[in-house]
Length: 138
Image (cartoon, rainbow, N blue to C red):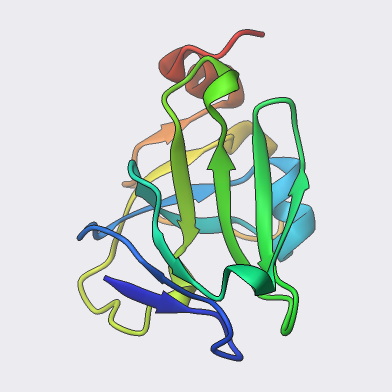
């Protein structure tokens, strides 16, 4: 599946995955104004335009990336030193072909802002439930 930022300077290709996850943590909300919607890639995406990618370490266990040209959020990289399985959480909005995407999980639901609500029939995990599920150290 192919994705690109708004200006087209960065393109990503990931294996077929249509499961969208919504994260309500404070860092995602600060970055997007609401939930962050991502697709999980368990292998590093193929990237074109690497020189346009800006990175910053947003926590002890991950880094966030963006296009230095247009500012578009690209992906969150869960680093191997986190003690969890390395993964890339790619911004779902980067994919033009998204007709069969489906929201499958919401995480950090206890951190969700009060001004929006998503489907009540989607599985949900609080911060503690999610961290326990992925085996993160507290």
